[in-house]
Length: 563
Image 1 (cartoon, rainbow, N blue to C red):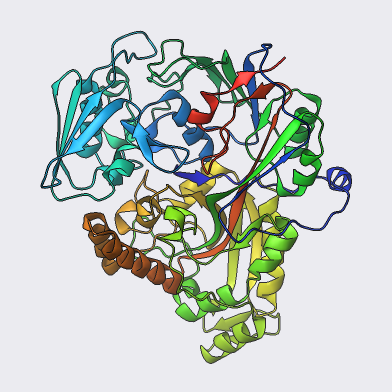
Image 2: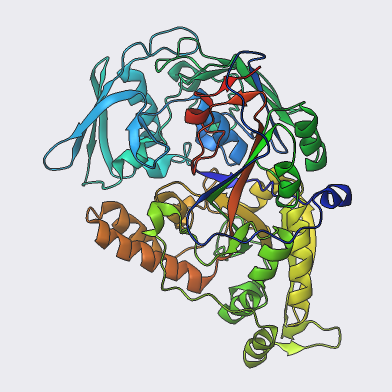
């Protein structure tokens, strides 16, 4: 799953912390594991209220796959839309819309045969021609469909010779085709055909989305964040066993955790790390900790000074010495131990160790050690002189930066305060600032109106997406690049890894790309986090625990109510 991670790992109030008993942080497992703690024995399904109520702090920014950034949007996409195939709980790809597929001997022609009985949520029959239209729409307007365009790189033609068959011809063999098509959503053509410009397309929120997924939109109130989904009783793979889902947005995590405790909601999509021990002890609640794909990073403005509009970042950030000093000032282990209660691990590259079972993560990268004395030495040698006010400068370049983060996070302010202290010891001044997520997206994407930003990503199962975030082409309106990193060599390597059919050859390229990003430092990757979730085991059962989380579509399709 891909998305800009609207970080919800938020600190709880002193009252909630006290309820946790003041226990020491939980140690991070060294292997990819699933850790599950059951507060009570899980009842057997016997019926009862069949509407699942899910709590979160964020809300979808859009239900339009052409222009969606936040985690919440992609969580909903997994429920209301369908793709030709999808990642299974074991990491292998299985058919979703497609009952089977094959590739020609030259690895250029992919043929997909659709399952029977597929209908749109409005009751109309779904055809292969409509799926072909959706993919062709991305290919014809990559700027408009910027969030999906990289998935069709190398596609030549997409046709539907009949209502049940889709044929994709590629310009070169594509090694990760199954992954690629798993993010090409079947959107309802009549809702999208009217748009003639990228701006019009991206301004379309699609809050009354029509899809073919297991749940269908009843109503979405963007102001309150309440989203009502009804079960799709005509779903081609069998109807869900619950009546529907209510997503409820909370103003803060204290209220959300309390709602879980008293039974006002049934599932928390992301449990704050500081509340995890408390949630584990709740009667009738099952808490899960799954080593996932998420990471959090410090974004360093890397936008080309010739960009239009011109970036507003402090020009000193272009100095490699300043970037190295910044990295040297960050104590990642302290962030993990103090802020996220040990439920994470220090990170180094943009490709998490969980991708491909560790195959794609470069083990040769040695992280920059925390050492503020070394940071001072680096800056001193680079000519940045410590002023009477404790801030270093070289000529007109003063090491004073904005340090921004999403306003609805209480973890990022804590990290920003810690960083400000560390930076200050090296003569770097930062001013923490909370910014609403919409404004932060607007400031970082295609603009560069910032210095430093704390945020995070939830990469896809294949490294292709997270690698694409660093390509020059993605620094456009609707694109994924928030750092403005631009390197012709990196861009070429990205295309090379897409064409590499041999897995070992592709691994070498992917490792080289990680090393470039690590050394150039558009990001300082801070930590890989666990996916912490919980649900009322006295009300629902049947959840599938996997790297996708218990709120994935495949999991919720199996959930049944208990008495």
